[in-house]
Length: 296
Ligand SMILES: NC(=O)c1ccc[n+]([C@@H]2O[C@H](COP(=O)([O-])OP(=O)(O)OC[C@H]3O[C@@H](n4cnc5c(N)ncnc54)[C@H](OP(=O)(O)O)[C@@H]3O)[C@@H](O)[C@H]2O)c1
Image (tube, rainbow, N blue to C red; front, side, top):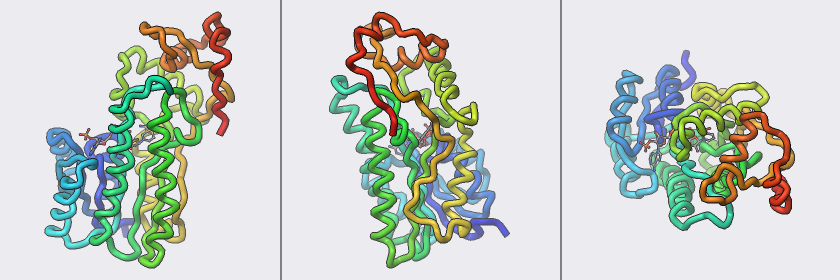
C-alpha cells in the first residue's frame, strides 16, 4: 500500500525544483497531482517527465483569478482535494537595508505571502476534513544571510501562518505544517542575478556551512513533504520541519568588496568566504560598525 493512495493534491510551483520532485514522489505514492507555474513550456516538460496522474494548470499564484481557474479545474475533474503543497516562491536578488526597492518588496510579498495565503484559502471549499496543508518556508528565517531580509521576512510570515492556521482549521482536523529547506540544488540560485562563477562560489561557500557537507537535493525535501502529507504524520500539526539546516558564523562583516557600484556587497562576502579568505581587510575594519549578529 502506497502512502498517498487515491489522494488528490495541488502543488504550486510544480514545474521545477522542489515542487517537481514532490510531484514525482506524490504520484509514485499513489496520488493524482495538479501542478501550477507561470511558464506553460516548463509545465508541459514536467507533465511529460511525471508521465501519469498529473494535470498542469498554468497560472501565477499572486493572481487570484488564476487560483480560481486552478480550483475550478480540480473541482470539475475530481470534485475534492486532500493535500495542498503551497510551494511556489521566489528569492531574486540580494538587497541590503538602504537598497531595498518597492518593486523588490512588492514582488516577494505578492508571490511568497499573498500568493501562498490565497492558494490555501481558496483551496478550503474543496479540501476534505482531515486533509493536509504543507507550506514551503525556508531555513533562512533561522540563519539569515546578509541582504536577504525581505525574502526571509516573507518566509517568517509563512512559518507564522502554519501555526495560526492550525488553530483556524482545528474543527476540520486539517493539519498545517511548514517545511523549511536549507540550501537546495534547484534553479533558485540561477534566478539571483549572479554570474555562473559567482553562483559556483556562492554554492561552495554555502556548502561549507552545511553540516552534511552538500546542498540539499530537491528529492530530500520531497520525502519530507510526503511525510507531512501522509498519515505517517497524523498527529503532527503546526510544526516547521527544517531540512539540512545551515550554520553561519556568529558574526559576518558586511563588506564593501567586489561590488563595482561600491555598495555593501554580501555577494563579495560569500565570494571571499568561498576562496577561504579569512583575514579581515582594511575594508572590513572600516565597516566594523556594521557587523551583523546572525545568531538566531
Ligand atoms: N532552493 C533552495 O535553496 C530553497 C531553500 C529554502 C526554500 N526554498 C523555497 O522552495 C520553493 C521552491 O523553490 P525551488 O528551490 O524549487 O526553486 P525553482 O526550481 O526555481 O522552482 C520555483 C517554482 O515556482 C514557480 N513559481 C515561481 N513564481 C511563481 C508564481 N508567481 N506563480 C506560480 N508559480 C511560480 C516556478 O515556475 P515559473 O517560474 O514558471 O512560474 C517553479 O515551478 C520556493 O518557495 C523557495 O522559496 C528554496
